[in-house]
Image 1 (spheres, rainbow, N blue to C red):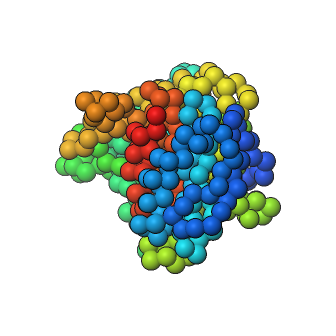
Image 2: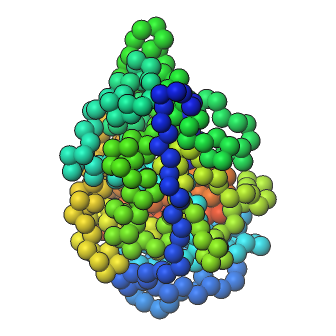
Length: 401
């Protein structure tokens, strides 16, 4: 995930978050969760608790993920698997890296987007928001340009709004893009100045062609806050992480929990600064753990209960709606839903469709993969960018039987 922007105009009223949520120390082991104790050795998995599920998974995980860590010299990696409701965790550490555990807190970057689209789908299902409502109606305090005013929340959610990946007026340095120096007012001001390509000539071709956009999902977060009357992070907690018992998923980490926060490393192996909170935080601000992400994936599978508590039916319906493919971008092999993508695979090879979302920051790469045909969730997170977490996660989801 990357950044967002806004201009402070006289008619504009910023929709600012009221205190970013903190992480809680308690961790839910989950049904059948394997306890993980960690051993030595680059490219080798940590020792795991005994259990038929763990023993069955170990060969394929060690073969695929172990080789991945060794080949890429990745400092640390966690693989979480929920298979038919039973959870297993496999921690790896490369040379000089700290071992990852099921409760290690990592930056999940753009996986945050599927939390936002779940909130959107739930609001639509509840009749609180129409997917085709023009932006100008939803954000009356912003003076939008004519074509921008016609963009809909659905177009923000499925990347057909025409919005670029990031606002065009961002500071050059990453540290200067945080909400402290590039606040929500600056992001929303940029939104009010921006318009889709081609609209300057009087046209407004919406929906626009596929264009992945942090800015678009970030703006959707502001729409939801305005429409539902609560800060985005409060909505995430009240409607998703709270009901699912995801006690370690939030934007900020409390001092008491920082010992569980993994250090991210850059492409050359150097430690990097924590990923800032940007004004488009609804597109990539969350931090989480393998335990929590398996709970989220189980809810996406449609499990009636997660972490010993019933999943709200409204959330089950919202996740199903958000995951449903809406179109196939030109030149792409995947089908696009609301931030989720569907990889169809090769039916002739017995492969079933899987749904996934990738996350990336300057220090982490992660993916959550949901395979309904196998009642399977795979979560992969490594402490380095661009390690190919998506390929590893999909490969594991295909080969686990």
